Image (cartoon, rainbow, N blue to C red; front, side, top):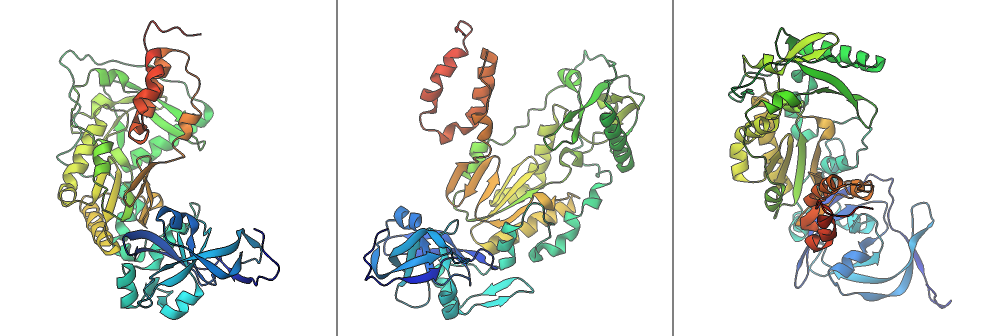
Length: 468
């Protein structure tokens, strides 16, 4: 930006990313609207700032600074926005008058409350317990819930760092303990029954050859699952093949090939939730916690007397499962019915979504979310269900769930999930088109004119279509 040489320019540090900072949800009331957003409390910032896109989005009035300000980073380099020339006015809870917020690019934080604001508010911060207290008039003005900053700081924990239980949930340490899953789950009314058609005839199968690496993985699988009581030696006349498939991280996933057994199984028609129905329930909630159930299907036992039907053959012998595994055709229905029943009361109250082993807990305030989360954890304890802490996220205003990005009053597709569409191989036959459109169909509600866009591809599904 060009400026005349006689204009005085001051300098200001916008944000210090290395300081201990706290992101809090706030509501700012203007003359004609309420703006729900987040603010970064950062003692390394030498002012109060607002993102230029937030100003543009809500058409906030702007004013020209008498003296332009050079925005600098904490390392004294010039911020990519260069010179700040404009500001807006908002009430930030300090008094009855509006205050000045400098308009610039604030990165991922819509608003930054820097050292001047902190000096005036003088919040009480307890670093040992991870809590922050703001004056009551500030809480009321910005509609800030009384939350502990330990929960919001937890959002910034890197994936490779140890996962710790938040202070609010330390009474449920046993629910997050992996050790409790190293034993056979209790028998319940939802034990998985394998009901076979009347013309079923038991079938034998061959042993699949394994590589040396796969043989080592087989030995580990058998040792672990025999030790937990998840499988036992079998003399069943029915046998399904067993093999491994590679995962992206280089490890091996054990597979029981139950295709022939599934063809002879009477299907359970219990419905899985429609994702569109689940998303309709998110409206109005501002805070989210996502829990992931450890062991998934293995939390359900196979009905006593039906274990032989799911026997699988390995180079080390014939075994039958005591718990439900992934390949059985009715496993999803059994598991969803179990989860719906266990958490029925909480689902009726609202604020809880369940799709298989993924739980999304929602609240309009942090306090409501915390209480609801404690209720869910207590139910998990009562039913001996363990939560995988490393896959949980707590007290977020943005969370990934079922391949979507969930925010208050906003749902969007996860860009990382769209990578599969961008890298999809060129279709060579109608079946390839079927697969591609089946995958894309999940996102049709996010694409305006989806049916018009896909019409040429739909024509290629026809048998008479000409392929070059």
